[in-house]
Length: 286
Image 1 (cartoon, rainbow, N blue to C red):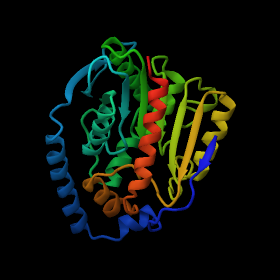
Image 2 (cartoon, rainbow, N blue to C red):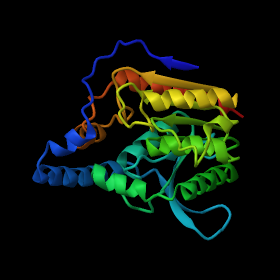
Image 3 (tube, one colour):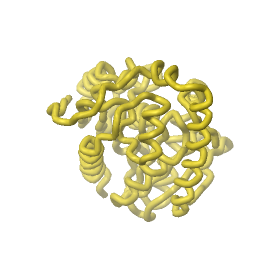
């Protein structure tokens, strides 16, 4: 059932992405890019407990990609799918948060090592993504988790990863449930009306990525999930926009500086994580 939260949180209005990109000088942008490169090194250095593995994609047995695993073998598995930036510090932060909740996480590197340092680079990488191929990466990741001790496996993702998490629920037999954050798949890739697995989705009221993760996209997804008959929940959080789950200081600053996003809303973040945990605890239990 679609749910809109009570309007109780206070954050500022989200400016347009164009305004955010036009408002700073090239020198300032260059400085920010260098800072994020350093932040990424520093933050990822704290993530030494991730194990880097190589997975062969299902089907051809030839295409390989790197992935990052964290959590105890035998725990329910969750494929954690990147935003348009790539496998950066924040997606690892998300995977670490999830692992602390008792899951085994696996991040597939869909960009094959590339990371966008500003919105234009990230958009270029996402525009060049082989989306059906990315679904195959998700499938291979889920299969790896099941072959390595996880009896049930979910998929979650953020931004483009949210869209791929839903696509995985539609197209990947090994996926048992999904939670998507501010992203919905193109019906040409995966029609959510045909999903048979439980899907939970989270969106921000101020999200302005029209047709992908704005309120209209959230409501359209809800209608498709109703048609599917699968268990589902769709939440829209007031006074937050796109990427509202990115809570590290580095990610908050990046969102505000490069994308024009609003301030961090910890109440929304905590509530979304609690719902995430309840959903996967229910549907990934053995």
